[in-house]
Length: 549
Image (cartoon, rainbow, N blue to C red; front, side, top):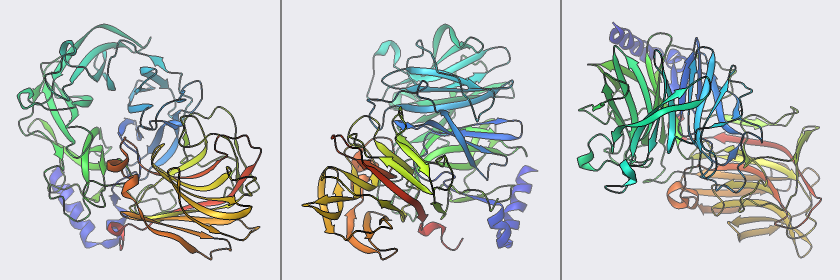
């Protein structure tokens, strides 16, 4: 019956173009750097969270009533005493959180690598406040998640090989411990429930991101396998006991794109790290990470959050992709809220700084411990500070995730540099070494617009002063960027075209993050009392796959 209803819905959507738009979602559901999704349901509400690495606040939280319209409601770690990221590299910090709801309480377990290790936080309201982290020192590994059984609670996680002796590179285990969910402490000894992966004789690598689901007397263990790159996949095991032994599904993996033609049009790759939820209509869904390369394995948007239908069939949970490829759209029993702020497709975001607080979508680089920014009179003011994006502290940096392969970000800045060290403008940031900075500064006493690649100046031009501010724009064109400026309103002039975009790709720059467009000011290690005033910021998507839809 479910198959018949789904088929009728698809036919209806195809016949009526209006309903196709109103009752289908667009992948990725969170465009840009939103990796490692985890989802839970609490009554009629759904909550989704992502990894945030060294960006602050930590662990963005999204809410939906229908799995179609999503709203960011805050962050789980938004107070300095909860999260100290000082000294962390961009791709360190917070790895792979998991969110669970049980008997009126929300739980998040996560790993802060290099410092706290695994921890748990709780809240009665997912909007917060969330508790301070409680460390779980006995949990040795990453990617923890909680499973609430009938009488007991368990934490399951990726860990070291047996006796910490690797049989091959990438050899890991999935381990299980009981957890006291009241006192937030582990109980008893840990148990290895998966050694290596689906078939250890084939040397599977990086078994991780485990989640347990109980259904019809079976315990299902779902994990990522193959590493969070091009060979990424999702696999499933089951057992009659939560402690195992777990048997691998003979048709594993249940999700991967690694076998497909790399030259296919508009590819979605790197799929895995899935979490699962049942909708209010009984339809099951998976959220998972994936990537949208513009060429080969090059992408600047990082790992993004996708969604697809899944179904229970022959005693196993299986993806229902409608073929081998993950699609850019699937039908869903919901209606689009035209007034909702968009996180996917070809949307246009513009901020005139009319609110007294920052839009929740912006990120800082590492923990903000002092107030160095201010919003007033329709403008955002940043203190020009010595910290730089190349360091490992908290610079004057307010970033927005690059959500497109093609599109642009722009801003307008009013700023007068006191010396050649002071610069302010639009930063296109991937990590401490890999970034482009389109900025205003001075040289030999003359005002300039400058473009830096890392710490190297690659283009500059003398400009006239403008009371209305200098407009700056970075345009993404798949594998390249173009940088523009306007010293008179909307009188855009090209500063440099065909700038290497692969330099900012994950393949080129490494790590686990994607690019951010950032309003940024620095005095490059020198004292300063200067300020930079940004009058607006906007980001517009123009990806080919979403046109005419």
